[in-house]
Length: 386
Image 1 (tube, rainbow, N blue to C red):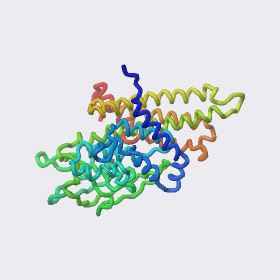
Image 2 (tube, helix red, strand yellow):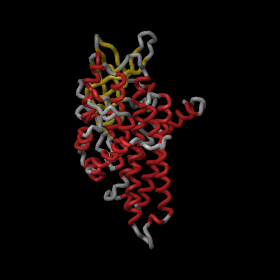
Image 3 (cartoon, rainbow, N blue to C red):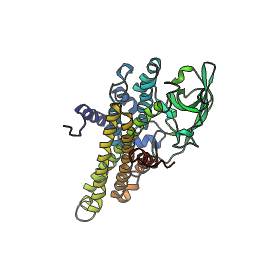
Image 4 (cartoon, one colour):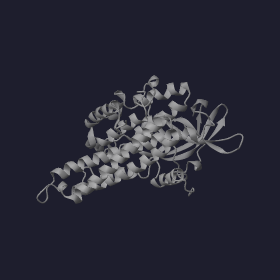
């Protein structure tokens, strides 16, 4: 009989990560973000403890765990107010794709750096004109001798300034059909013709977003990850983990907001008793907690399906988890800000900065509308709407 609880090992992992992250906390994180500094210190400590690459096979320096383990790490960091966005990208997306489809030589070259934090890898799929539609990607790769030449543009690419390499989604021409098919290439961030500029964002985060310009970037043959004809299957191997990590990011933020709001509501007294005794304050917090626990459960289900190799069922569950978690986080943070009243929009209490961070979960890495399209089509069998 399953009690729908995580294994003792997973729970212990959560406790250890929470203990480590507590030493940094929200104030430390926000100070770094506002001053333009990085959270490298926390990143490297997470790596040293073996948590960063916990989902990567042991022979490449990882922990040999699953996506559920790295998602737990991501959630506990966010719950302590120090969410690390690059965890979604480097070990979960890039690490998964390379571990699954890379050659032995590629795994040896890139995975140890992903695990120990010294070779962080960014991921570049989104384009200015394609948005969520990966079929409209115009970044192209053409064969040149025994190598490749890449050209294109990417937008909203996280942490390029902190990464040694970027896993770029480009399209190559199929020699038989003449059609373009998606392929994955590892591009060094210091490659000639590879440039990036920061996008000013309202979000309070030490990790920046970038526009990326790829002009005649020359790559060796072994920059191609996986089979040239692997197409969308290889790409989607990284997208289910991405959605699960995004969900964990959101549920962690929601837990952080609810913990702060509950503590405030227990202490703050305006009339006779603490404001938490008033249902108008208590009920929105309770509702958000219920929504968040439901989202966490679906995230665990999605993780278990990915780790079991059931990609089809995992796709549905991962999309649902990401949707539910983003909604829960938005509601939790809104209720937390309201609980604090005027204090909710001061820098001192650190609530308002969570508004944009939580709201981003409804947009990225895939919009809530596209998830609803997916569920309508795949879960309910409704006609395709786009």
